Image (tube, rainbow, N blue to C red):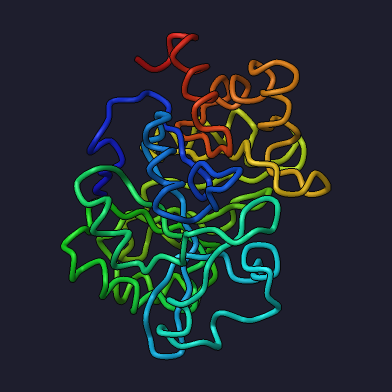
Length: 276
């Protein structure tokens, strides 16, 4: 098992910037948003990928086109030249100067700077790996996906030595299967609705730690009706008390926290003496 998550930092708890640090006139999933997140202390950048009709990889969370482009279109039905002409909108639905970044541009911009978590890649894993290999950036890439058998097989076939984290929803039924495969299984994202969920019980956390697994927790709250961490969220951390959100995740054994409030989360971890 090769784990390069600490390649560029020594943080005890690493902070992942969910789609970068966006707001006002800076759209998420863009190079400016990612740059701001790194300046705020993030050590890992989470980003969403998709493939154009002519096989080019771009950064965007498909399905969000009406809210980020003010257009009812499907980016996966466009070719790369059409995509390059588009401009993202800001929080007031006004056009910005920012376009949709290609994966090539993002890789080159962040080469040698941080870890990149690639999300929503199930439909284009071989293409994504080809681009990463072209830039010689394997050690900077973390792949994360639901442990679907078809996806696990693709990972084993085309990216066996890339860092991989399955996403366990409520319980873990596949660790033993993955550990028997030729996959660089470094840890897991744990998603749990309540504090009674199997994946957040002390016995399970301890067993994962003993096997050297890195645990990823989500403070992100993209839908308050769908809890990812039993209510220990960014919102609680920002509005009420960070000990109830980010702190709770740290105290329960998480090595990574994904957040939409990068600077504030990083500051909290430093103020508490967890990171330096």
